Length: 183
Image (tube, rainbow, N blue to C red; front, side, top):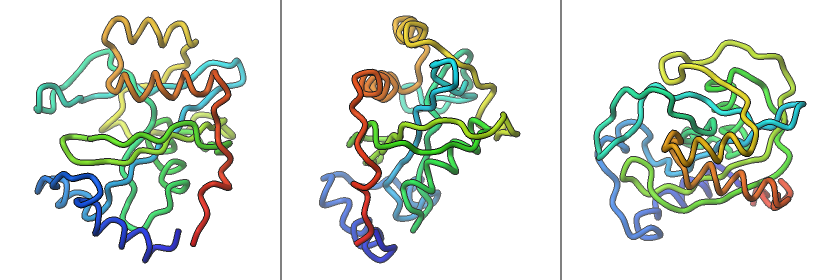
C-alpha cells in the first residue's frame, strides 16, 4: 500500500477497532497500529524463537526469565509490513530472512492498544548476526513439540499468537505475499 493509504487507515483505526489509543502508545508509535513478525524455520525444520527480557504482566512491564516469543514488533509510521517484519527479525533474532508468505493475521490488542498483526513465514538467509540485547536475552531453535511444551508451562509471552502461527505453518496455511499489493 502507499504510505498515504496506510496513514489514512491509521487515522481511522479507532473507529475500525472501536477502541481508543493510550497516550503511551501514541508517544512511542504515533499512528502505527500495525505489527509485523515472522515464524522462522531453520535448515533442521526447527522454529526460531527469541527469549524476551520483559513482558507485560497484569498491566505492568516486568523482567522475566525463560519467556519466549516470535520476533515481532510495531511498524514504524509509513513502513511497509514486509519491511517491518524483516527489520524486527533482524533486530530481535539477529538474522536476515526471506519472507515466504503470510502465515497469520491477528486483530486484537497489544499493551492495551488495538493492533493488527501480520506474521510471515520466513527462512533464514544469514548466519546469526548481532541482536538487540535491550529487548532480547537470547534466541533458540525449538521443535514443534518443544513449543507445545513451552505453552503448557506458560513460557510463551504471546501464546495465542505463537501457537496459531505454528499451527497454520504446520497445516500449510501460508498465503502468497502477492496478497499484499500496493494500491
